[in-house]
Image (cartoon, rainbow over all chains, first blue to last red; front, side, top):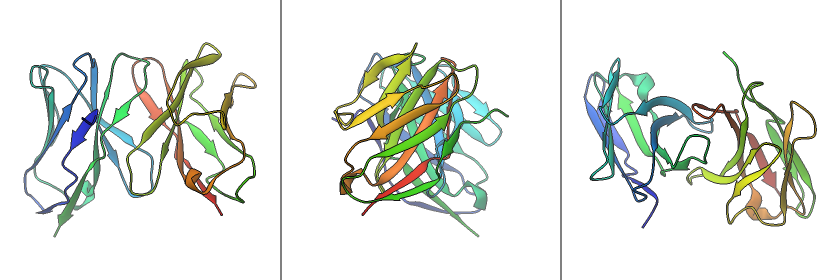
Length: 110
Length: 111
């Protein structure tokens, strides 16, 4: 089983749409969870950390379900600039290596 | 905003040659990492470095690879005798134990 699994997509959505991405992880000892964004041939950039209580940052909402080992990202009111690959990332403890999913491609069209 | 700097941005090398990829982590960070991403594939962990020694390495990080922190600011990845399959983006990252910051990467092309 892959350490971090994501639907590769692509998700093709119109501007203004709401889109949700899911991710599962295999190691129940994982402590930290993140969503990163990666533009074509660029470095991963942190979008948001994911907390057990769920957290929101503007149009982005992240949820964590430890029992199901499941992480989600919801993007509301999609913008053209949201087009990117969204990477689900976990690690066992702070300072340790990050384990990346293969990413979900989002394409927002006008 | 502090950033991780990587040089060169692109390197072309002949198979069998040695390359050194350079990184300047964020100055107050204590954890350093190298990752690689083969075109079209996921980001893969290579090695982590803490307290002047390797703290963890992946199966990919074999004897062909080495890391060094030669002074107080640089963090280097050396690949001896490059192979065609070493062609990839190599990302350096640093962390204060909480957040992780990635450099913009070095695109290595082995011909």
